[in-house]
Length: 274
Picture 1 (cartoon, one colour):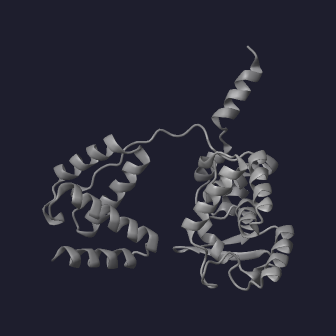
Picture 2: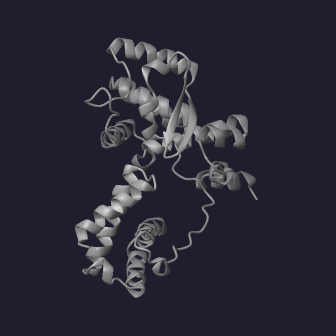
Picture 3: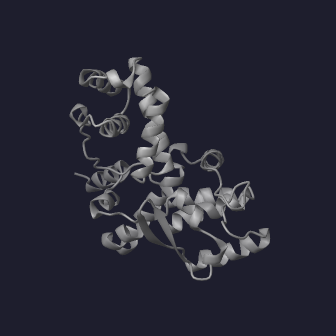
């Protein structure tokens, strides 16, 4: 089987296992990276070759990135029925702090700046992410027809979960959509039936961060999900409910939001005044 034929078969295998389009493309890129590193056909790769690659990754990347690349390699080995050659991922120490989460002041500064710049779409996009805890990809389910109830369902692979938008935000979004003659997907891109490009969201958020004087590393779409989770826990102290809202399969995933940031830890230690 040629290189192209093997990759086509691999892509089809990932599709049959219901991997998302993003996951499939990442796996393909990662395997090409692996092949380029060794400069030889994948059929001749040995376990030693994989361990050499693992050592190279450890020296060059952070543990999470190392594991991401290794998981792709292991998945490919499973596809080629060479399970015995799969390698262990590196152990990552459990994080004891949740850092770079937006403060309420920073969140307010971003909204105010978006208003001042008359960027209503970005203003409401931020509000929607931070008020519901949804992932950026789930913005595709926020459509004009759900604004009466504020409820819809999002699908991720084989899992379907309920998404709830606050009533006051629904009212504002109805006015916004009426003003701009928007129907269907509210945060659409050039095509009315497709979500705005994620790269464009990223660029606009970085520009807004600079204009608002908020650290750029804090301003990315997924961080509004973190902000929502911290605010929800602070108000209601109900981690089980939060896990349901965020769509987590395990409460262990949600527990990260019970951790304080390094700044919060510092403030608490300073307050002891010992």
